[in-house]
Length: 292
Image: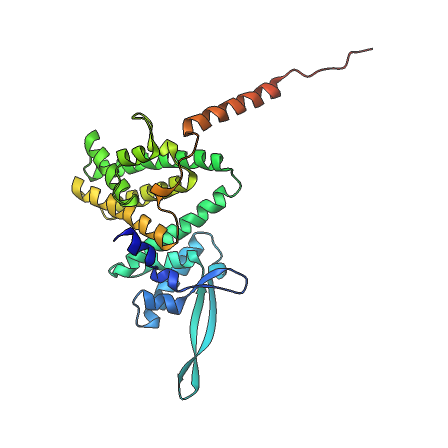
């Protein structure tokens, strides 16, 4: 799918998103059932019940995410009948698609869409109080941690040699960056050979790569994917899905995001210097009044 067609394509889940009088987004369960291909309400009702259980088990208040309501719909000749519906939060939709029929292709698309939406919201809450530099430091640390987990999952799938792992990583970048490999991204950023591209990304670009890494690791393990080619293909497909979702949400493609003026190493040095200065200030001896 070309970037132009992706930009012009709106996710079916985005099309049915509603906004209430207070500006809060929600999805109608009836609309969601139709998009997910459930012809019978009772079958979808069972999926909702499983999602509500998962919501409660996660410590969330079910009523905050699944608002039960009845509404009247026309049935012809001016008559109406009452039907059951729910106003669903983004998190509720995420739980529903996780419990829906995995054989439906649209369900897999919904899992990606609502996972991205949910993680974006979680990150927004976590990072809301941080400056851009602090966000970068935090996210770079998260990417490093999850890259270790991704490497372990890739190794279990059969990606053993260092060269093979570099190829595996390139497939993820190619999916997310529209065909660009790590060296291509570095060239666009004007980096030296030993400079790492992740150290020269802003918070938005780092967040996209964090999601690529976490979802690839999860998919490799969840589907018990084996073999280098299958692992490479999985990494590429996840990267492409993240890219597609960014486009559907009207975001900027990662290769078009600006490169920060300072590297992560520069920010880390400045942070260490700041902490050192704070420690010196704290350790200054107390000045006592001279005794009379």
